[in-house]
Image (cartoon, rainbow, N blue to C red; front, side, top):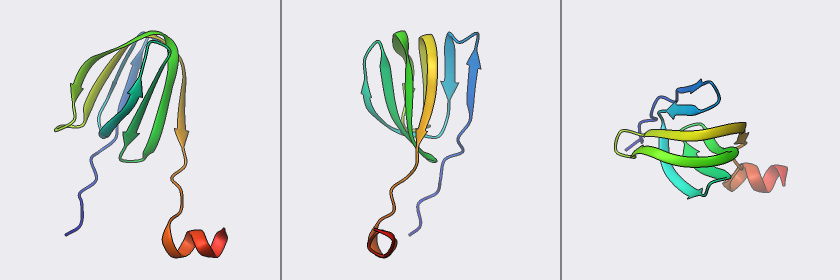
Length: 87
Protein backbone atom coordinates (compact mmCIF):
# COMPACT_ATOMS: atom_id res chain seq x y z
CA UNK A 1 0.00 0.00 0.00
CA UNK A 2 1.47 3.36 -1.04
CA UNK A 3 1.56 6.12 1.59
CA UNK A 4 -0.23 9.30 0.52
CA UNK A 5 1.95 12.41 0.68
CA UNK A 6 0.52 15.31 2.66
CA UNK A 7 0.42 18.67 0.82
CA UNK A 8 3.21 20.90 2.08
CA UNK A 9 2.39 24.61 2.40
CA UNK A 10 4.03 27.33 4.44
CA UNK A 11 3.11 30.90 5.37
CA UNK A 12 5.39 33.29 7.28
CA UNK A 13 3.89 36.54 8.59
CA UNK A 14 6.23 39.38 9.62
CA UNK A 15 8.94 36.79 10.46
CA UNK A 16 6.98 36.16 13.69
CA UNK A 17 4.26 33.61 12.84
CA UNK A 18 4.98 30.52 10.73
CA UNK A 19 2.15 28.15 9.86
CA UNK A 20 2.59 25.06 7.77
CA UNK A 21 1.04 21.79 6.64
CA UNK A 22 2.62 18.56 5.49
CA UNK A 23 4.53 17.95 8.73
CA UNK A 24 4.95 14.28 9.60
CA UNK A 25 7.16 14.54 12.70
CA UNK A 26 8.67 17.04 15.12
CA UNK A 27 12.26 15.83 15.47
CA UNK A 28 13.39 18.42 18.04
CA UNK A 29 12.67 21.92 19.24
CA UNK A 30 13.97 24.58 21.60
CA UNK A 31 13.81 28.36 21.62
CA UNK A 32 16.54 28.74 18.96
CA UNK A 33 15.76 25.89 16.53
CA UNK A 34 12.93 23.59 15.44
CA UNK A 35 13.58 20.52 13.28
CA UNK A 36 10.59 19.07 11.45
CA UNK A 37 10.20 16.18 9.06
CA UNK A 38 7.86 17.19 6.22
CA UNK A 39 6.47 15.45 3.18
CA UNK A 40 9.25 17.15 1.18
CA UNK A 41 12.19 16.46 3.52
CA UNK A 42 13.58 17.70 6.82
CA UNK A 43 13.21 21.39 7.65
CA UNK A 44 15.32 23.39 10.09
CA UNK A 45 13.74 26.58 11.45
CA UNK A 46 16.22 28.87 13.20
CA UNK A 47 15.43 31.95 15.25
CA UNK A 48 14.91 33.39 18.70
CA UNK A 49 12.24 32.70 21.31
CA UNK A 50 10.64 30.01 19.11
CA UNK A 51 7.56 28.27 20.48
CA UNK A 52 5.32 25.57 19.03
CA UNK A 53 1.82 27.05 19.23
CA UNK A 54 -0.09 24.45 17.22
CA UNK A 55 0.80 20.82 16.69
CA UNK A 56 -1.54 18.44 14.90
CA UNK A 57 0.42 15.61 13.34
CA UNK A 58 -2.79 13.82 12.37
CA UNK A 59 -3.49 16.72 9.99
CA UNK A 60 0.18 17.60 9.51
CA UNK A 61 -0.28 21.15 10.83
CA UNK A 62 2.27 23.11 12.86
CA UNK A 63 2.44 26.76 13.95
CA UNK A 64 5.61 28.35 15.30
CA UNK A 65 5.85 31.79 16.92
CA UNK A 66 9.00 33.79 17.63
CA UNK A 67 11.56 35.58 15.46
CA UNK A 68 12.40 33.41 12.44
CA UNK A 69 15.87 34.00 11.00
CA UNK A 70 16.26 31.00 8.63
CA UNK A 71 14.35 28.17 6.98
CA UNK A 72 16.62 25.43 5.65
CA UNK A 73 15.58 22.21 3.90
CA UNK A 74 17.86 19.18 4.03
CA UNK A 75 17.94 17.11 0.86
CA UNK A 76 16.67 13.57 1.43
CA UNK A 77 19.41 10.96 1.53
CA UNK A 78 19.49 8.34 -1.16
CA UNK A 79 18.97 4.84 0.11
CA UNK A 80 19.29 1.30 -1.13
CA UNK A 81 20.52 0.69 -4.65
CA UNK A 82 21.08 4.37 -5.53
CA UNK A 83 23.10 5.03 -2.39
CA UNK A 84 25.42 2.09 -3.11
CA UNK A 85 25.73 3.07 -6.76
CA UNK A 86 26.38 6.78 -6.18
CA UNK A 87 28.17 6.32 -2.83
